[in-house]
Amino acid sequence: MPPKQVVKTGGKKVSSSNAAKPPAATKQVAPRKPQSCTPSKTRGGATLTVGGKGVSKSTSKATAPKAKEVKTKSPTAKDEKKDVKKIWSKEDEMAKRIQTFYRRYRSKKLKLELKRKEEEYNNLMDKLQREAYIEMVKLEQERAEKERQREEERRRREREEAKRAKRMLEAAFDGEDREIRAILDEVLRLHDPSSPPALVARATHKMVECRDPHGNTPLSEAGAGGHCSTVQLLVELGADPNSKGQYGRTPLYRAAFGGYLEAVKMFLQNGADPRMVADDGATPMQVAANVEVEQVLKEWDVSTTEQLLVVVEQKRLRRVEEENRLRDQEEGEIKNLIDQAEKENSAMQKQLRKAHEELNKRISEHDEAIGVKPEVTLQAIHDAEDFLEQSKVSADRANQKLQEVKMKLRMKRSEYCQEEEKADMCDATINIKELDDVLLKDIGGKIKASGKWPMIVDPGKRAQLFLRYRDTNYLTACDPRHMTSESVRMAILGALRYGKFVVIDLLDIEDMWTVITQKFDDVYPGLLLDIMKKNILNEDRYIKLMRPGDSEDYLPKNFVTSHLDGFGFVVLSQLFTPPPDVAQLCYIIRIHIPVA
Image 1: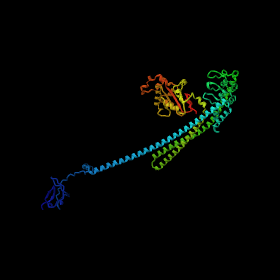
Image 2: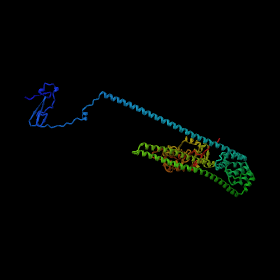
Image 3: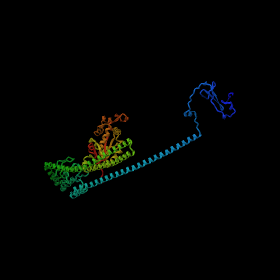
Image 4: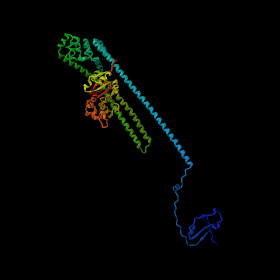
């Protein structure tokens, strides 16, 4: 049987018997190599040839050589992506536009939401600021109203006191003993039954020793009127027989000048010193109006006067000692209350510190807690916060109680301040209209002669307004902007350079001088002491105020003597009684409050 012919059709081998069949029935085989035929299958040396439907077998033992197997890598997804070229379709473009518009919409909506929240926050802050400002204004108005009421009450008391003093002086001059006793009874009725005896005694003695605008006392007026009974009454009430009034004249001087013999004898028997001279250099004997008065003064034994003066001084010291004892006793009671309040306040402050420590401890435990439910640690934090708030309230109450007791002590001390003690601390009393002549121009040269810088005592704040709008370098002690070392330095340096006044306003705070000293020492140590001793006017001192960055106006050659002579330093206080440590360094000028 002849072998079947293989027909190539389109590169594919097909047997002749199947050549007439349609292509769908043909079976494709792999192309063979030209040099040899590769059998499709071998089994034990036999060769199977696939052709059409039949199978031919060859029993030949010769085997064809094996072809080398070539391993080819299967294409990966990454290689397929590289081979595939990305094509941007209309659907992709529309999806991009939709995403763009959506993102714009979301961003606008988010922006509007954030803007709304910001506006709500700003409105809330504005509301809170307005409410806080209103509350602050209300508190300030209440404080100002209380201050105004206290000032009105003080002025009212001063007016009534001035009226009583005027009545007292007139009654003494007219010899009306009954009126004098009635006035003293009025003074006693002004005080409550629970008022300290020392305070009542001081008020009575103050009325007995009141003065007119010329400095004359009721005893001096009684001597000028020649009323012996009035002289005796006032001396028994503690009046000083050797007080000087207008032109340095004593009560004995005025009685001798009027020629009242019995009054002169009464004064001599109660410790009046006939050796005292007036401003004109005359003694009571030299101005005696008649021979009888002159003879009594001439024959009077001065040794008796010395003994009587010792007795008078002993009475005065006993009175002062008794007043001080009663005052110390009352202050001691208040100090005991202060000690108790300080202990309570210290305990509350300690409790407050422990509360803060406890809260920080609970917060740390919450942050470091492992294997513990957060609700447990959070509850501990909330309990610590509640305890802290309670501790704050308790500490505030204890501190407020302490401040109230301290205020009570200050008020008690202010009640004991005599007008005479205040007058002793005062070098001059002027009205506000005279401030320019007395302070800035120093007419009469009293401030310069004292060797001190002036201190203005004005509770009415009129001097503050006056000096603020003058050509002065004004520094407020409580203003942080004014108390920087640079502000202090330039204020003093500029005043020295241009011959101006530096004004330090201590306001109504008692312990501001220590703060001022520290702020001035920040410029250079000992600056305030150099100013108070006027050493700052020396070149070796004010040159310490200069800095390399200063302008040419502050070169040492520009500091001329005429400008240095115009330099002034003024301390301004609203306290009616300034602190003694500051007052002793200054020339005290008190602004007189007119009494209607």
